[in-house]
Length: 204
Image 1 (spheres, rainbow, N blue to C red):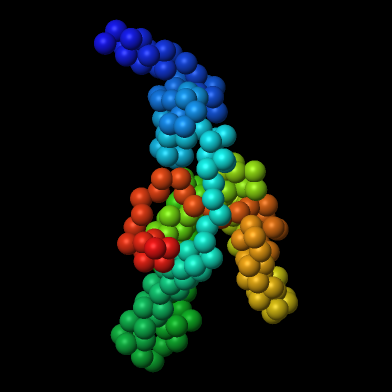
Image 2 (image 1 turned 180 degrees about the vertical axis):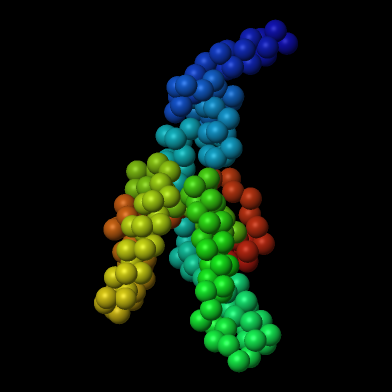
């Protein structure tokens, strides 16, 4: 019993290997490196080195399903609001009214909050996958929002064939689309992520 108490005290008195300003809350479940409470909650109890080593590329089906979920979450609220406005105000151009963009802004804020905390949008969280940098470190929100999403959309508007080329890149061995190469990111399976019904349905 005393040995167990001493082990707990040694953990609490040690700094986190990734965040030296914070006290360790636990040891990495794989290598035993001391990590803080933030690492425990955001990395499933793994240190950064073990998290990178454990990263397995997400399946193509999971990536496609996550994109479909995110697309529906982005478009459906505004579409429903526009239809309701058309029914209530048939003489007005309801589908072009500024109010229909309110749900879009709300969805963007929710998605940004999810990505900031876990590196995964709503669709990716449901499918048990997430976006990381090429070296396995967490991807910043600006990197995902600007380089991985906004830039490809702009390029698609300028060159219609970019979307097809972007999607075809996923057939490679590392399963990285062209926008992943542009942003320096990759999509991996989340470590020990709870397998939701959607994840079991798509990935088996």
